[in-house]
Length: 201
Image 1 (cartoon, rainbow, N blue to C red):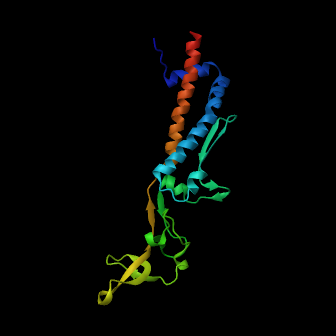
Image 2: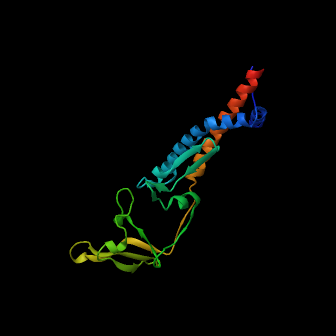
Image 3: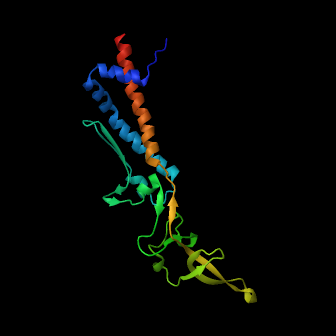
């Protein structure tokens, strides 16, 4: 005959064992929680986001302090260098220029095969000029001749779109990893309590 127990019953049983019993049960599994949270969050970063350099993914860390019973899941620092976009990718937000009036968003011409801009700034590309699209969008690019013979005509090739802001929706790659690990931790603690109850019957 199968025996079942709710999480509340599990916690209550552990409390009967005293604070030390509860702390011991949680501490025993907290290290596993940190590893699961880190792995799940890195998997989420790969699937939720467009991975380009991998810097954000490799900055994700799960750590555990078993004495203080604290688990920490973080992102944004890699080899002591800040990954500045970690927070906005998690929580979302509007990106605005810190200098000047516009953000320069690279087009395919200015990107690598991985989708990363090949240039730190449009200033690194010689010969670019301003141009407005038919819809009024401001661009930086170059004029080239297309066609053959007498049918040749100038065509504008945009390298960068110039915009005043960009909104990024929240991706919650850390929160989803945290929840995955929390479910596992709760299950492990419940199993400990189940063993105590059934072992005492």
